[in-house]
Amino acid sequence: MRFDLTDLRVFLSVVECGSLTQGAQATHLALASVSERIAGMEAALGVPLFERNRRGVSTTAAGKALIRHARSILGQVEQMRGELRTYAAGLKGRIRLLSNTAAMVAFLPTQLCQFLALHRDLSIDLEERTSADIVQALGSRRADLGVVADIADLGALQSHLIASDRLVVIVGRSHRAVGRSHVAFADILGEPIVGTADTALEAHLAERASRLGRQLDYRIQLRNTEHVAMHVEAGIGISILSEGLARTLRRDLVILPLSDAWAARRLYLCACDFSTLTPHASLLAQRLMGRAP
Image 1: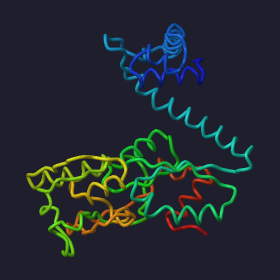
Image 2 (image 1 turned 90 degrees about the horizontal axis):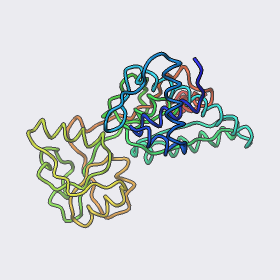
Image 3 (image 1 turned 90 degrees about the vertical axis):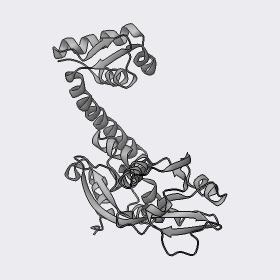
Image 4 (image 1 turned 120 degrees about the horizontal axis):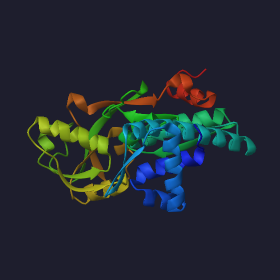
């Protein structure tokens, strides 16, 4: 069996693009070169990796199996290169951490500040993602650690509870619910909603609404929470956010806790396998889990 890292990158590019032609464009290679590399891989493995059709290509069962191994191999190579680059820059380690919005705003800043102050030779690549995206990235080993809400399906990931949070409703000052200590989810289902682009939260709320035979009325969905707050303040609708995130908003808004038991949610630190983390990623994991020396 003989093929190299470029072959694996070409293979994954074709998988992601669903086409040899687009895969060739994405890797800046000639179509003939890509076709030759794929054919060489199939000959070396003794099985077809793709099924050709009018729309492009789709992976065979063998191709699906190779996807997992290719991502793992390339991920390890990139990790190796990244760690060696950090040595050249005077750093001894770099950690890839993904976080959902709630943890990014309310939980991680203090923790990461203290960690980096204590470990001057370490660096963190921090990226905000939805909980669902984080689970997928960890599963394919494109990150070391991730912080997600329990509304996401964690699949086969290992997880550890690190913080608790609650879903709240934010409303403008003129809203009829102002003055109440809390609201029930059922009481706001007829309200227009200013949504956030958090697919896990959206699915969770939709499922809860369906149990009541209802559905949410989204007037608009926005990625930026400050933009969400601006629309709520203007009376466009109400929004449902994590309490930690809601309390960071710089608008004249009222925060009303959801009284439903399921509105209390938990944040988990996740990894594909905590026992296989690099030493520096393991240090961060211990810190976030409250086990730091």
